Image 1 (tube, rainbow, N blue to C red):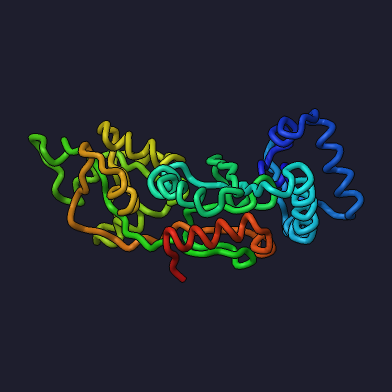
Image 2 (cartoon, one colour):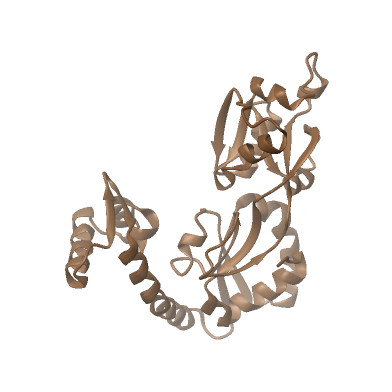
Length: 282
């Protein structure tokens, strides 16, 4: 599963404390046993093919059960532990301030918080559940939408207070656009809604951290195309919303897990508490 998740023999071998040749031989032995290739090989990268995806889907429940058994034996009966993947910006802006309430309600529940990204791909392989930012979720998974949002263009206050203020969307052509990798289509959606489908910024810089995007915008490194909630929750006087135009976002935050994970008490407790604390949308 590590090879499938990381897409690299070398990276997976390091995580498993194996040599790359040894892990490569294991992958090849599995393919010989199955009687068909399971990966598409592209230079140094490996990606599951259709047969590999099918096999992973079939064995994932058994692997989950093994993980549950080990967790039960090592944690004891009085301690419940949830391995949660969550994006750092969501955690700092919306989740952390509610966690004391979770602790009061369920003192037996402990969270291992992982902000490493790729939450959906790691479900059952290091994560029990995840809060992710996405357009939609694989229908084979359980998913609960946590919000609906709009896209704001966020920039440094100096952009509107300076001698040549940015007041029109066309002026984006003079600026660098900051875009989150998990919201790759945000800028193109926004410019289409602005009636400027051919508008090109000076450059597009990609980030995998919303926190760093906000700081980059505050430092005048570009304008960030982010969710309305990101701007409002930041409460950063250095930042302003540019233009009156707002666009409905195709991206939402979702709580995601494998369907069977909801039968596990830590996942169910956290899920029910989260929906109550933050609300959810169908």
